[in-house]
Image (cartoon, rainbow, N blue to C red; front, side, top):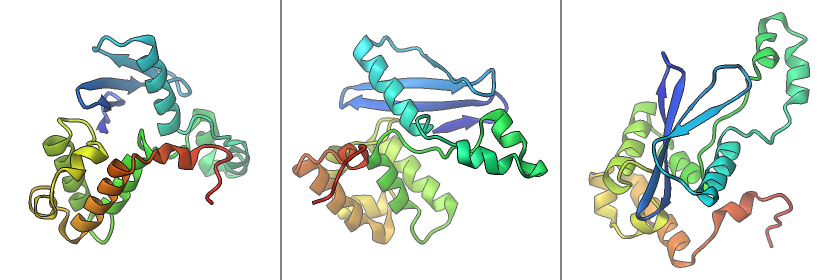
Length: 180
């Protein structure tokens, strides 16, 4: 994510596959609508995929009615339901969320940013890298170039398990999923 606070624009690059990346910009002219723009040519399938991921990222399917009802009872928080605020931003995939969570472990926010920036620029060609891309590296590369430190073997193992076993992490967050 790249946030331009002055223009109120969020830029994000979707890693569609190993050879296709889609850059998007998200902004809002009103409080409750998101406008999505891209300079890439995209077909209907990719458009639906990106729209679905944006719904997940901004948690647009989550019902915040109870939260808004509570906020309406405090004059300091009246702006929250009025603006449709209060949503937590997540990543486009559970894979990305989990890796970024690992990057926040026992360190400063700036070090987390450095690790993520390195993953994106060095391994992802300006998009978040796939498990397969990370699985092709080694522990020393992750420690030294990405600055993962002691997290390196854990990230490498996680990436290799997801890549080698072709695990669809998104199934874990589908409604009705049961761990057996």
